[in-house]
Image (cartoon, rainbow over all chains, first blue to last red; front, side, top):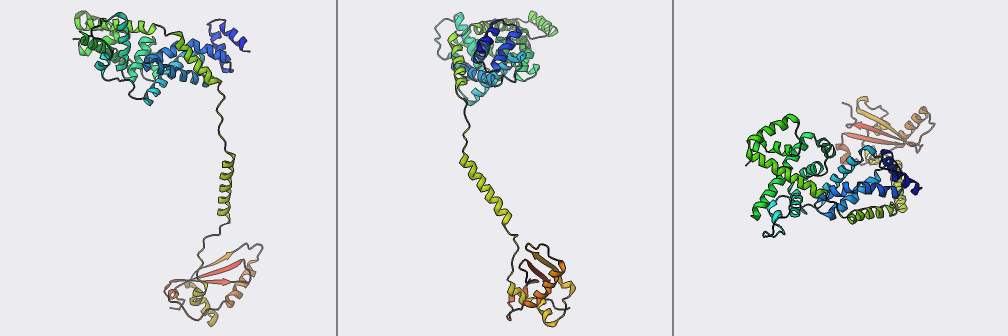
Length: 194
Length: 207
């Protein structure tokens, strides 16, 4: 039974194939569910990593997201699975952060920029990227979610609004503020190093 | 220094989030404002680098860890709800006892000191003087029945009359009865299921 289900799944990434994976997973096929996780793990863990700011919390959040996926398989609509996963990922990260407040400093950008860096060291390309990713920590939770979904995950503004349950206007405002804050963070960091 | 009023629009422009008309307006401003032009260039560069950084894949083992944990969680036997049968039985017994107590409890009727009340009651005077009490003086006559079934009303009335003659008052009259505006006489009948209470207002004397 499981082998049959997987054989159908491996047949291709056609919508019918996706439906059959979901159907097999709904029927309790763990191998099919494993395949479902593999298909969406980059989306879930990648987004959670940017939202949580560290890998350990992101893995915890991803685990919770996939467990919720398993519990809700019967109710899910195949067409909206990605949107559902984004929404749950954002919510789980939000809940985790509320349970552990203060784990990520968000206000003191200068302190964050200076932490652990040697001022004498030249700023390489990789370091600049790491700096940009760290700059996400200075954003508010909603701004960060909007920026991650729009600029990193490539969702449209309307899709981001749907995932976050906000209006398009609100999301546009959050995105523009987030971009300006990131830029401000990098500028302040660069000035400190000169 | 860029223009504060243009900053947000420039930030949206850098990410391609403006409609055609708005984008054209920002482009016109950028062609005239060096500071905003520099801001737009910085924002584009930063967004580009952010996307590149995010696109770098995580090591496969990080994904495997998550999958392994999820599958291990699903493999665990489902948590069974703890059921305490004795607790349910105890709760049920307590509830049944409470219901039983409520159902069998007699109505809370204050039972007066029969002898004292009878001593000051005008009904006794009636039995002595063979006069009927004033109609206005009687507040109510209450016949309390205990499981009287199939009793004919006329038979009960007969018993009332018989009982009224049976009751005799003791000689001393307590002062408390004298002060009370309402008095009650309990008439015992030969039927243990029928008790008659007679309530009077005042002393029962004619005015």
